[in-house]
Image 1 (cartoon, rainbow, N blue to C red):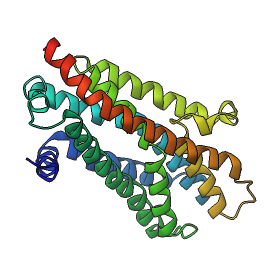
Image 2: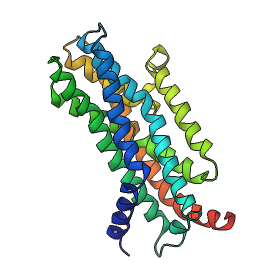
Image 3: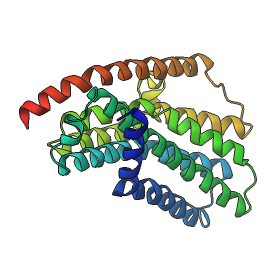
Length: 253
């Protein structure tokens, strides 16, 4: 059974589970709630857009933890992860496939949450931000959180017997993300994975609004290098951990 077959099987399983609904209803709910609120809020267009993106960035770590925990729980309920433990290939391949499917779902969900909001926001008569801006913001939102998928996935599967571990990481991550928007994060945000997408989206919104903003190119570059470096380390760790995890799980189960 090749990687393509594993990928198709995982896509089929996810599409017939609660995961797919989480990735659809969560962004649609966010769009609906904020659009209703913004019809009555006396904020500027910049304030509304920046506020929406900031809330998404703060909620993202928790949502990532939630979906990885749900995925881990699905495997446990399917037979104590035996589907992963008994496949005739390196177990890390299965983990890479599972994480890749989550990343694709996360990207599509981000696009739905931001572009969907942008299209409706513009339809309400707000023309200060183009759809291309919202598309770019969705990409920044997703890319800034890629490392969190790896972290949450490792925690959720390593401690699959306890849902609290994965959810706890998400709650703490969202709190840290909120702190990174304050002055406490000014000098460290580019080294804190939970605060990177929030800062990227905020700076992008301010720049697109025509505000005179120092984009802190050095800090932005530091954050890009950190995301690439952390992503590479997590990828290697996932590959190494995959085979170790199967041995430990087999013994424990």
